[in-house]
Length: 246
Image (cartoon, rainbow, N blue to C red):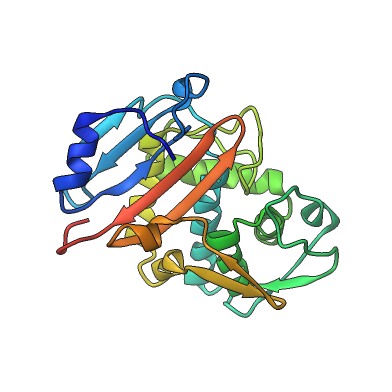
């Protein structure tokens, strides 16, 4: 991907120890996409902002939405209300979601553990809807739950309407809010955080590679999620740790 020239940011990447929770929206900065760009880089422990560009401007989160879907799924796991081997049934609505997907069939089931890997690596939209329906009955109800949780985490400029990040005119977030979610994910669910460093996932004889190429290309990266829809461009929330600094 080509990036707009930003000397301060490039200098930071070259000389600093780490980056955390970097969200690049519209990362291919061509003239038509320049207005979509937004980013923030923070140091986790202190909360110090090391770089910021349009960090509080509304953007479409695309599949970064699935970070919140996973946050709520991890809450259920932590409470014991579901287990890793719990099976979730796929509805006709879930099966009908647009790609990226596992092409699940109505009536088919998927375990919670497989669903986590499917969201982290393949970013499967059918699986995201199956999770939403399993936890809240309908995806609409789950979207309201996601928004309530966003407010509780301090994500004051975020509204969710679905579990996947598929286009919805009212589903908006900001780079700063996504950084808050990234920090909360690691803080609240350290026992599950390793899922985000999975480089691949096998399902029904097929191997799906993680869309987050930084896991292999940038030392210290251990998550978290990529996304893309036409309305936003390419999105990324990344977490990196080097020498004990994140």
